[in-house]
Image (tube, rainbow, N blue to C red):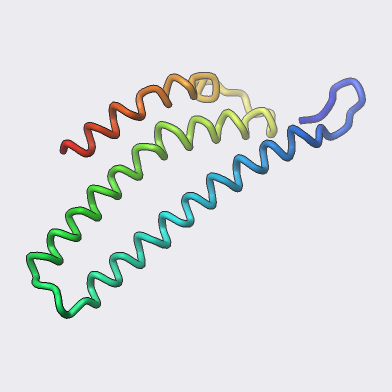
Length: 116
């Protein structure tokens, strides 16, 4: 983040880091907003049968499980890859370096969640 020779802030690197963090938080905020509104609308609906509401809740649980998979296999590893160098955090577990490795498992785990 800082140029070692000139002891100055590296603006392109800072903007890249901020862009990545903002992008991740926007996605998480949209997900939370849509999930809470969906649950509220299902509970408020009076014209649906109990079986239909139950089915909708089951689908929502499956979507929640599908949302958790990218958090662990994409957002956390890439978040570490973006933030660790900025804060000069020692990555003992090589999370940041293995972010592409974790991302390669994402499609398989996503399919497993859909099947279950």
